[in-house]
Length: 262
Image (cartoon, rainbow, N blue to C red; front, side):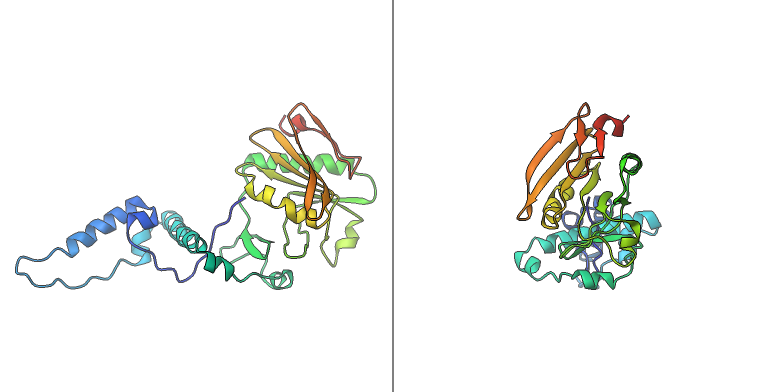
C-alpha cells in the first residue's frame, strides 16, 4: 500500500534532476537556454517567465495528471526528508477525521494511519480475487456470534484502517452506530508491496487484534502474526501454498493456503 500526496501551492523547479520528467524538462530547459542567449548587439534580453504548470505538464489530461502528480509527489517527498518538517506535520485525531468527506479532493477513498490521511490504492484483479475468495470462505465457515467485514473501518486510538477482511465478535446490529474497535482476526492482501501492511501490525497489536494475516499474492504465501502483547505480536509464522492455517482466535476458520490461488 502507498500514498499519493496532494500538495497545494508547490512551485516546481524546472530542471530535469528536480522533476524527474526528462521529456518535459529537457524541452523546457532547451527553450529557456535559447531564450536567454545574448543578442549580437549586446543588449540584455527580456526576462521570460517560466512556463505555467499547464504548459509544463501538457494539455492531454492523462499526461498532465501523471506529470503533475509526479512533480507534487517529488516535492512532498523532499520536504518530508527534513526532520524539522516531519516533527511539525499536523496529525488528525480520529474525531477530526470523521468530520472529513468519505472521499478526498481527488475523489479517492482514504484511511487514517497514525494520524495521517492516506489514499487507498487501486486494487489489481489478483488482489480483488484473493480478497473475495477469503471473504466468501470465511463467511461460509463462521459460526453464530461472529461477523466478517470487508474493507470496513476499525476505529483505533489514533487510526482508522480499512482492512481487506476483519472478523469481529457480535452481530451486524452491534455496529449500526459505531465501528468495531478491535477484531478477532484481520487480514490484508498485499500484491505490490507489503511494507505498510507489516508496519500496521503494531496498530492491530495495540488494539488487541488476536491474529493478523498478510496474504502475499504474487509469492503465494501467507504471514501470520499472533499473541499481541504491549503493542507487539510475540508470534510470527509463515505459511506456504501447501500449508493449512488454523485460526486460533476463530477456530472455525481453517484455510488451505493454495485454495486462495487455485
